[in-house]
Each structure stands twice: as C-alpha cells, then as structure tokens.
Image (tube, rainbow, N blue to C red; front, side, top):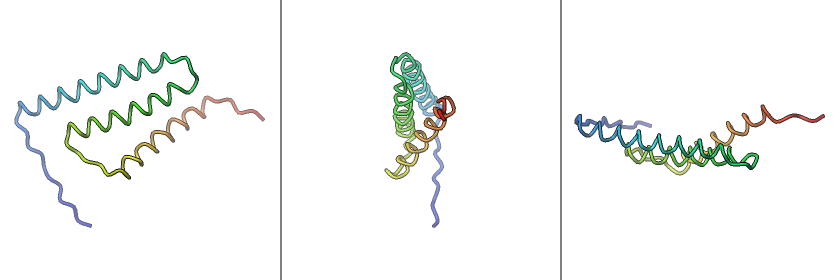
Length: 96
C-alpha cells in the first residue's frame, strides 16, 4: 500500500500561530490533569486523566489538520486505558 505524504509548508507567522495554539491546548490540558488529581474518589483521577488525554490528542490533531480514523482513535484509547490499568496494578496490593 503506497501512501503519499504531503509536506506542510508554513510561513513563520503561520508556524508561530500553530505553536501558540498547541501551547494553549497543552497548558489547558495540563491544568485539567492537575485538577483531576484533586478528586477524592479512588480511580477517578486515572479515568479523568485518560479522558483528558484522548481529548487533548484529538484537539492537537485538529490544530495540525491530521485526521485519524475511528479505529485509530479506538486503538489510542485502548492503549491509554491499558497503560493506566497497568500502572494502577503496580500500586494495587495483591491479596493471597
């Protein structure tokens, strides 16, 4: 399967605008992740952060005009959930 990759050529002004939009989104989602850490419900922080990451990826891709198929987005979401569950498992005490 051959795919043609298009090179995006931006002027300095367009590049700076795109960088600014990326910076604002990353800052916003970093604040949301920090605020999610204040949730007093066990596991709610992890769930909120996975949802936050998925939304952040979607918004950053929209800014860069990168389109993903639904199956690719599902794959990313499954990866984030499995990584979060794996990390949570490392801290969850096993009972014998």
